[in-house]
Length: 207
Ligand SMILES: Cc1cc2nc3c(=O)[nH]c(=O)nc-3n(C[C@H](O)[C@H](O)[C@H](O)COP(=O)(O)O)c2cc1C
Image (cartoon, rainbow, N blue to C red; front, side):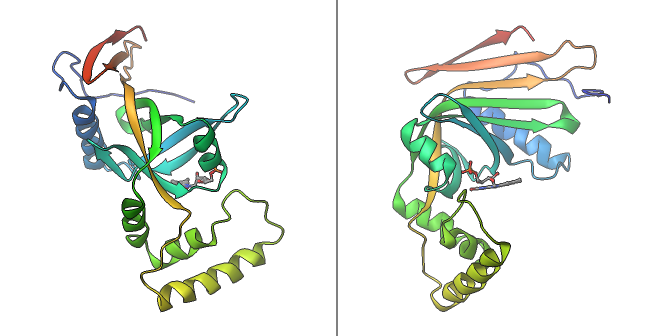
């Protein structure tokens, strides 16, 4: 099967913002404008106490001065792994643009109030699903899920201000961000930003 077949738009790595968040927003906006489905979906990688990685797809909820934010239950696998080893990598890939973005950094939960705000912005069924708070536990029978969803959806309807204490908005404080632009001739561009203290430096990497 072909890969990176292009053609892709040109990317000039010498004409970029100082802050990788600004370039990320440019690229994400480009992905939105290109009609890419779920351009804010990303792979979140964490490790367990033995250093074994696990990865899964999540939605990027916010990005800016307060980091790269995602939301999830804290009691599932990723929540446990992050509580033990608060470091993560995020990977975005927009195939139609031949673009990948890699982010690495320390992870911390944001305030309870912001997690609650994120929770309350979810649909009734999404709130009901999160309230069950059994993510990543072994399921014996799928009927259990249907029953639990009906029960918790009723609860959400009855108490619209109800917030799951398990629901957590996390922020990745990036110290490394890489922008990868694919090229049909394999002259791929890798632009790496690294943060030391508050300052970002950037440079090219061999593809
Ligand atoms: C497109 C897509 C978006 C997803 N978004 C989220 C999300 O924002 N939060 C979340 O907890 N799980 C999300 N999931 C489910 C996760 O991939 C994963 O199955 C779940 O979080 C359990 O992961 P864990 O067992 O490693 O904790 C999403 C899955 C897909 C395919």
